[in-house]
Image 1: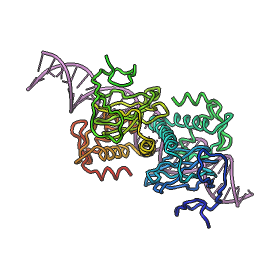
Image 2 (image 1 turned 90 degrees about the vertical axis):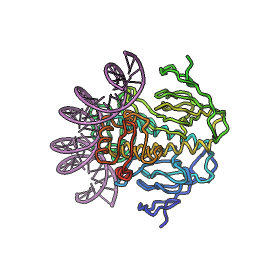
Image 3 (image 1 turned 180 degrees about the vertical axis):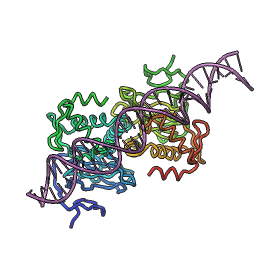
Image 4 (image 1 turned 60 degrees about the vertical axis):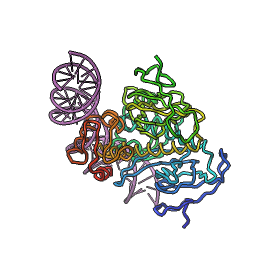
Length: 216
Length: 216
DNA sequence: CGTTCCCTTGAGTCTCGTCAAGGACCGTGG
DNA sequence: CCACGGTCCTTGACGAGACTCAAGGGAACG
């Protein structure tokens, strides 16, 4: 059985799904092009892995997270198609990366993009992390979820609709809450008419401005 | 009245204390050298300011933070002598920077260091922000304060002693707590014999390993 | 059609925040 | 040196928001 990842990890238990090595369209830099497929919940890399690549999402969603020894998890970021991740270098990764749903990832190995390009990416990520700190450190559950919905809609949504790739557990671990609290606030927003839920993953934003106001 | 900052801000209300333009020793890069003095609580730059410099602390402590419209504050980082900050670019700063106590800041203007140097700094800061996210999102008040004390001791302490430059309010805003909770946990650690307090700013770490264990 | 997983909802608990009072520290001035 | 005032810190009582535990419902998959 072949691993579907270029650098297999022993702790990987997901079944093999395929090792695409396709060329998938335009790219800013002229590296060797490779797109790999990761099924839902597959690990892309682990904390502590040597890092020597930059990753760009072709389709799907990726979560980056840290763990405490007792299993508590903090998702630092979700990434959506077009976005880059994997530059937590210093020679090694400081986060785990997993596919939230079936995803295709373009892996850019050496030569990596020039430092100036990387600098812009990392700086943008730093700003995002700092904004996230404010949300988690100083906002209530209701405010956090409103902020989450607005952010997700601006990055992935169209026409008032967002398809949630992630479970309630993922959302909870992203916002520093429990799944019960996430669920309760979703229900609250629904009963107040700010959103509609289509199945468990379909989110319709009815009053975007109301959600924005809640964010404070 | 002259501002003591190179790029004065109208909202600054602190009194002028001095505009040192001294040369203060060796530096990795050969920029024009300038050290400016900032009294306690003086603003170094504001969110939204155009950014065109890199800052290095000569002595003192600096806080970087964001604000919500209702005044809630999240301190993203404290910086101590030797450390760099101010690279939240994109052309502008995304955080406020203030001196926690009287501080001297070396300001490196153009030509800024090469991208490779900046990339290392920003990456390190990103990793730190991600670790901070885990602390704030998933750890209890007791764990957060233990982690804070250990971190501060490793960066500033010697011989079991740390001089806290920041107030309880600063610590609370850094850890996403209230000053009362911070104070209670300090007292708890003292009564358990993990620390001793010498005045309100003198912290003696008696059982570093105990604090490390608490961090989980 | 049944099983499984995930989500929702409710009841009770607990941690941490709020409000309030008192105490310690520090600079100023007598 | 001591008295004074302001600021910051500590401590207590109470309350609220979020967590835990538990049960039931709904969607997805074989």
